[in-house]
Length: 189
Image 1 (cartoon, rainbow, N blue to C red):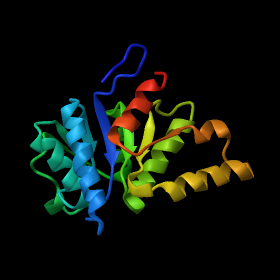
Image 2: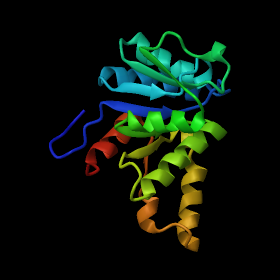
Image 3: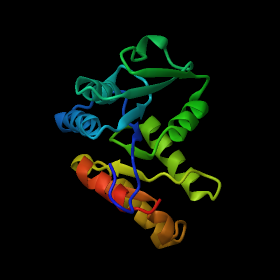
Image 4: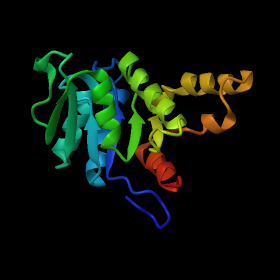
C-alpha cells in the first residue's frame, strides 16, 4: 500500500489476545483485519499461536491466501504453535520474539488484548521514543472503544507532565483497518 510521498507497508506486526473474547465484535474485527491484510498483500507477523484472537487473525489472513509469519517462543507450550502459517520462527524468549517481530515489520498494530498485548504495545512505543529505537508507525485498532481508556490515560499523562505532547503522537488510533492504514500512510518515513 503506497501513495506518493507516503510510507510503504508490506508487513505488519500485530499484537492481540491469546483468548477468545466474550463479545463477538472483537472476533469479527480480527477476522476483518486479517481479510484487510490479505486483500492488500500485507504480510501478517504475529505471536505464532493457534488459540484465541491470534488464531482468528492468522486464519483470516490464510483463508484469503495471505502470508502469515508466526514468531513463537520456546517459553510457551509447543502444542499451541500455529503449524499452518507460511513461516514459523521459534525464539528463545519473549524479548527475542518482540525484537524479531519489530525487525520484520513496516508497522505495528495492537488489537484488543490483555497483559501480553499491552506489554508488546508499550514496548514498541518506548522503543520508538528512543533515538536508537525503531521508526515504525505504531497504532491501535480501537474496536468498540476498547482503547478509549488507554487514550485518556495517555492524555492524562500529558496533562500532568509525564508525557510530552510530541510523544503522545507516537500512538496512531483508528477504528477501522482503512482508517488506521490511511493514518499510517500519511506519516513521514
